[in-house]
Length: 123
Image (cartoon, rainbow, N blue to C red; front, side, top):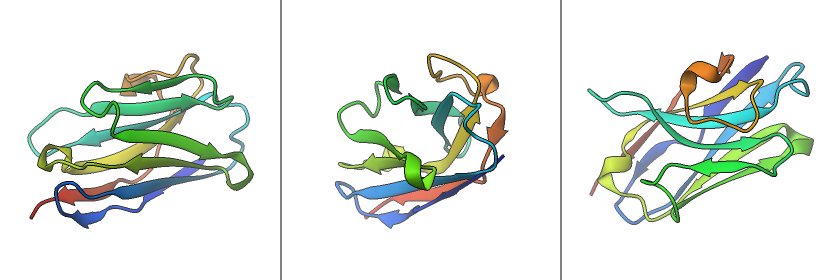
């Protein structure tokens, strides 16, 4: 199983970005895909996750109402639409996949991780 996160970049406060997590390999066995982030000097934080069935989602309080997770099963890709970005959203964002239900904000429960994509929110 391989995952690749992309879509990061530099954006001004209030702006938007859409992150993509492309997956490959035998993923139908796995149940949840999560987005995590880690800012410099801070612990990793679970941002959002979704079950492969799409009927279970989670958002951290810090992003609720601003971020939306979605998936395109035909493309084996999960997206994180981020709007109203704030400087405190600056971090490296990672996606991960795991055999868990419901999906979890705890990174230790995920089995495979992709390389991160850096998001910088700054004027």
